[in-house]
Amino acid sequence: MYTGLRHLHSGLRYVVLLLLIIAVITAISGLLGKKAYTEGNRKLNLFTLIFTHVQLLVGLGLYFISTKVDFSNIGANSGIRYWTAEHSTMMLIAVILITIGHSKSKKALTASAKFKKIAVFYTIALIIILATILMAVSKGFITFWGF
Ligand code: HEM
Ligand code: HEM
Image (tube, rainbow, N blue to C red):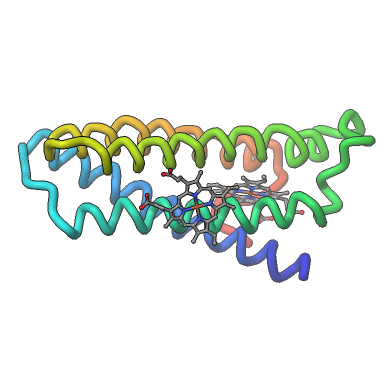
């Protein structure tokens, strides 16, 4: 169960990152090129939200079973602190930003306003997610490309 969830969560990072990057580039190009907001744009932004939420659900599951999440030993080492506090908090903020951005884009009335909400919220979330992953990589907890 733990190993399965861990591999799923680890692998899903690439799907989330790839979708986020494509969604951000598409939104910026739509905004700057004054393009129409198509059904394809809507689906891309929705799939990005859905995969991010699946990642959230798996992350929450891991949070309860991972041996690296341990409140009583949070000061024991930087690894325990990272997985217990930093990773989950930062990723949760990113997921919330994506959810708000998607909702605001859905409610916006013009194509440029729809692109703008995605461009702003998804970009900030992407930066937070990359920074949080790089924090773990730089401390040697994970490798960027490995499982
Ligand atoms: C397999 C897991 C999940 C899937 C497939 C999923 C999918 C979705 C979808 C399709 C939407 C609606 C997007 C729209 O507005 O069209 C949504 C919205 C939302 N989801 Fe998830 N989700 C999942 C898990 C979660 C979890 C675990 C949470 C919270 C802990 C969550 C919180 C929310 C919130 C707050 C919204 C926004 C509702 C709104 O716009 O008013 N989701 N999700
Ligand atoms: C977009 C959101 C997220 C991304 C991209 C992400 C990415 C990752 C990555 C790359 C790992 C390392 C996996 C490995 O060992 O190779 C990881 C581990 C972990 N994540 Fe996330 N995560 C996200 C959200 C969350 C959330 C919201 C939570 C909890 C609330 C969470 C909880 C955990 C836990 C507990 C681990 C450590 C599992 C273990 O090795 O014992 N993650 N995550």
